[in-house]
Picture (cartoon, rainbow, N blue to C red):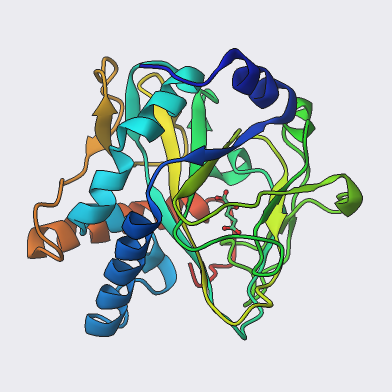
Length: 275
Ligand SMILES: O=C(O)CCC(=O)C(=O)O
């Protein structure tokens, strides 16, 4: 059931994001972090590079988060009752590294049309100005797609280092979240994040994105899962739904999904980055 209040919806429409929304308890967020660290320790390459995508296809715990009713209720308020999981990404910034996310609009290279979709960013650790939380440029979603400079940079967590230049930092707003809270943001809002200056990792698990069943992928093929309601248009392939961590068939499915995703992300680009 859609559950964002009128006030939250007005805020989203005006500003292009809404936050914070409580989703997981601190204990649940800690369990998710442990799951990530178990995977990293046991299978060192599996979350690296393009492997940061689609962890919900190989981990039942991540899959369960995508189906969390509190999340889906909030998402339903924005995109309606037929909700598909189009993809997920782990945005991890380790301490003492220089990773950042340049200011960009998600809709620029992602190929999802129409824009009946929303991105859910769930804090697995606290996320704040010290450790490089996201910053949103309120209202920037109203001005359609902007020019993005392609600045491939090994510290940039975006595929092409796509960058909207000259964003007035003083007009941007930090999205401060406690572990377990989420923010939702609009496909065309300009946002980014700075480096992690703290002594611990900053981890965001991002459903990128929840899409309505009317949303097509105009640049390639995606593997989706029905999260709520029905898929009336059947525009996409369906992904596996994991019942155990790292099942062979799920790993294969995820490989196929990532292969297709890479083609989408680098569509029209002469250069391929590390993600
Ligand atoms: O995690 C970050 O710092 C940025 C993530 C992002 O750009 C997104 O979720 O759209």
